[in-house]
Length: 313
Image 1: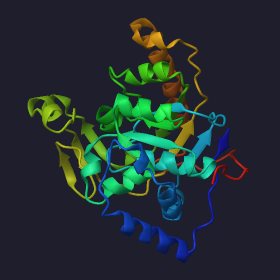
Image 2: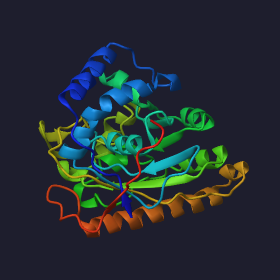
Image 3: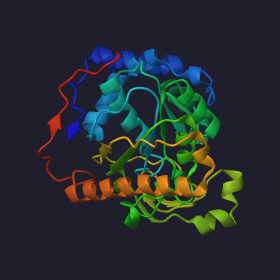
């Protein structure tokens, strides 16, 4: 097993330049469906600041079973806690460190964060695009890596007692997208950040009664406790996570070896779906046993760091 190594802490000048890049970008409008909004130069400038959060706050540990493939692929990840913990941020920092900021990569994201003040432009510049089958197809057609969280809010807001389960529900669109685009699937599992808050229930029944799926595109109304709100009731607003350790594993790619028309065969789609969820659940179970995550992680042992310099910068 290989892991993305820590980097030296950035200089004060590099941090200042990262902050300047954020200030310069903040007034730009978000363009959720525009693939050209991704800005590799911006990413390179803010990466030192993001690296501080990655290394020293979330103490991210990202392992790879093997190097991810050249060319386009669909990375399929579980959600690791609610909206305040940036799963996509953790995964993308590891990706940029290993493969550089110029190699095209996008993350499919719910459209609500694009409307947050300043955040929409920053996320957009980092490669976030609105989650839709069309955006996924266009990005894959460009030869890019595309990251998707099929479970969405149902996976992110699952009760704390279910934090070590993959919850994709009936969402199998990612399988059809990969088959039609003729690209492999790269499963990604992550643990630890769910311990940054407590969720008693995802409140799906409450969400339906309040018509949240129609009004806010939210299928959940979680009840629990999180900083800085204290008691959380209803709409999953971003929370302020304490410094929980995040442990991520990027699994071996799954080659589908299927014709595009197989995307319209429910039996084949279901078989691929169960295969993907099965390997992800097994890896999640292994990360749970190792315990190198959360508020009180076990001591790290037996990890070999990748010695090669990142490519593509």
